[in-house]
Structures are given as structure tokens and as C-alpha cells.
Amino acid sequence: MRLIIISGRSGSGKSSALQLLEDAGFNCIDNLPISLLPELIKRAEQQTTKGDTPLALGIDARNLWQDIKQAPRVIEALRSTGVECDVIYLDAREPVLVQRFSETRRKHPLSNDCTHLLEALKQERELLTPVSAIADMVIDTSSLGLHELRELIRSRVVGGHSEGMAILFQSFGFKYGVPVDADLMFDLRCLPNPYWEPNLRKKTGLDHEVAEFLRSHPKTNKMEADITGFLENWLPSFQESNRSYTCISIGCTGGRHRSVYMVEQLARTFLHKFGNIQVRHREQQR
Image 1 (cartoon, rainbow, N blue to C red):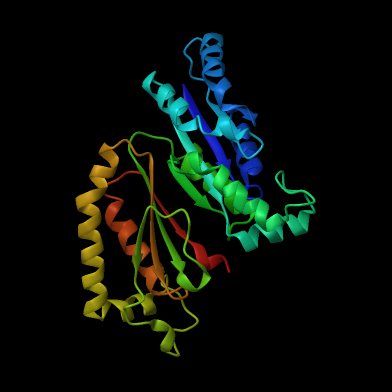
Image 2: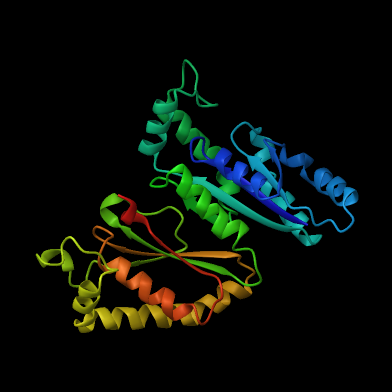
């Protein structure tokens, strides 16, 4: 049986992710206590001839603290019985979460007359630590709209389900914050910056002129070779440790020139080594 656990702080997009999985044929249950999960799996397997009906479970701050602490033990026990379980944790920067609550005028489940929203978000992060610590995939939804989030879940969880490890190469700009979903991160701010070339400033790393500019500098080629060598050495070990997903984030100052170019180069290189390669340019949506 395949089980997807969706968790994360309120306002990060858990409900939208569950809705997408439901549309994709998963049986979805929101806010089921962790302690009841083994019995649920047992009954689900008994009700299907092959136990192959996919199941998605939402876990959030409405679960009791003592129950959430059981998550690592319960999930490991399920995996030992042959259940294919992936834990997806959604999060966003706190100013973004505050803005989303302000726009929707929803009440945070942990907020009350004595606990304001920002404090509730911080408490929620601590409460969900046992789940975030064992997550197979962490997705930063700060810069994602509803459509982008659903497409990301569709590609990485639904469409990306196959033998082997899924790898996401993601470009970003440090000036907009470090992505929380990065498993590996590389900083390109030491490379020559096309931004300071007037004819390249409004272009991106997807444009031929920017690519030619960066290729003309030995530092760029050396950085690409070093990152490629590191990944060639260590990604097989990641895969051997039964990881389902790895997010490799490449950052520069604004996330539009150097990091975009490098992500495209790396994705092209590793497409021939790993079957499931995905690309995302975070700041291209700004």
C-alpha cells in the first residue's frame, strides 16, 4: 500500500495538497490521530484485494502533542511491514503565513485571546517538529500560488511516483530568503554577475546571451564542474538510503541569472543519470 502523509503549519497549503491527491484517486483523511493509523492501514488492506488503494493522511496542530510525538515510531513500524510511506511537510515564511491569515480572516487553531497569531505559528512549528524531522520532502510554499502548489504536488508526488529517486533542481535568490525545502544548497554569489551588464540586466539565465556571458568566465565552469562532481559522488548514496526525493537549491543574489543558468546546466547533465529530474525557478514567478 502507498501512504502519503501531508503535514505542515496552518496556511502552508495542506488542504490544497490533500484536495489534489483526492482528485488523483487517493483516499484522503484529514486530522486522523497518529495512534489510529496502524489500524486504518490494516482495515484498508483488508478491504482491497491487493492493498494497493493509495491513501493520504493530513496531520496538523489539531492533533494532540502526545499523539504527534508518536509519528516517527508509528511510521517506521508501518514501513517495516511493507507500507510505502512518504511524509510531505509544507511550510512558508512567517510573514507570508501571517498575510495569508489576514487575507482569509481565518483563525489559527492555536491562537486565542492570550496567544496572538505570530506566537501561535511559532508554537505550531515546535509542535510539529517530530513530523518535520522525518519528512521525505519539505516544500516551501512562500512564493507559490494555489495553481503552482497543486502542479508541484502533482509532478513530485503523483506524476513523479516511479522507481528511483526524484530530484528537483531549484534556483532562488538569497535576497528573497533561503528556501526551507532544500536538501542540498550551493551559493553562486561569488561568480561574475550578469546583472551589472546593462544589456543583460533584464534577461535571465534562460537567455542565450546570459549563458554565453557566464560560460566565458572560467570560475563559472569550475563551479559547475565542482558541483557536478559532488553530486555524481553523493547522489547515488542518497538513493541507496531509500530517499524518494532530493531538492538541490542553487542560489545567487536575485535568483534570475547565475542560479537559473546553473540549474539548467545541472538538470541537463543529470537527466541522463537519473530518470526523474524536475526544474523550478523560484524567482521567475515574481
